[in-house]
Image (cartoon, rainbow, N blue to C red; front, side, top):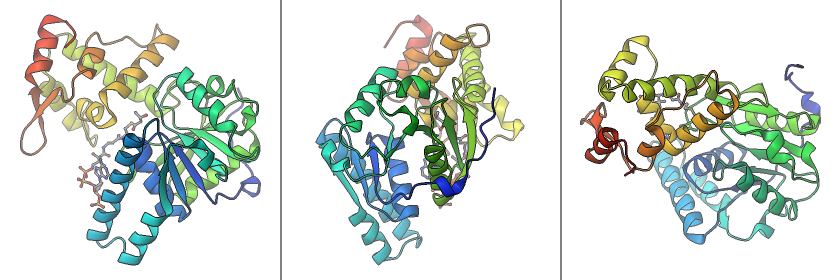
Length: 307
Ligand code: 3HC
């Protein structure tokens, strides 16, 4: 297969307004990054005003923290606040030239979102998906203009992790690809080109680590011991701290995608989905170290039943 080479940067389109679909934690984190690094208007949307307001309030809190740390002066912070808006009306995306989604990890949901957004944006607008493991080509198959779709996958925590996986489908245009690479650079991230394969690069590796760690727990090893076993390896966090960071539901979705596509190479943990139904399955000490499971999680593991 042809490797995903670096595109001709001259083909990149200017990005003067960004649309973010989904106002969850991941989307809010990168909405903030777009406004901070590109200094252009960013509009976020979600299915309800309540969710939009939650995303906006996260962004405003983070701007206040940056101001308190001295990373932004008062004028800079006010400028960012003014550049971020929320809406439930997709018509407000009409003048966006880069629209990225981070909605529920289900191909059908993402397809619906893009079909709807395609009605509102100009034919030149670049569309991007932050999917963590789904096929970008399949997501774009419902578009009348699938060549404008590119994968643009951020990592948690967005403010700190330096990587963006740029995913090219067989249809992605050189313009869309170049815009993605140049935008990643303007966000001060390292863009790596990835083939449109399940889990791309990072999640196919992490799914192994997280999945096998979860299966070690399925086998009866205490969670704190699995976590402690990783400490000498020098990784910034153990597998369960990582699952907790990215979100249990996200981790479970990544696992499902990998098992579906590579049933001989990936094996599901019986408990991951059940634990993902709990708000906070892990107990931690004052220093944030994982000490064990919450009472509810313990019951789930002992009985093998859903909470
Ligand atoms: N949100 C925003 N900023 C955060 C943060 C968060 N959740 N966690 C930490 N930070 C910031 C802190 O504010 C601090 O910033 P400052 O220097 O401006 O004050 C900086 O990060 C360092 O923080 P700490 O000193 O508290 O943290 P550590 O040195 O312990 O590092 C870490 C924290 C960066 C999260 C580190 O543990 C790490 O790199 N962990 C691995 C993370 C990882 O592998 N992420 C990829 C997950 S996979 C994924 O997201 C893909 C998805 O599809 C599943």
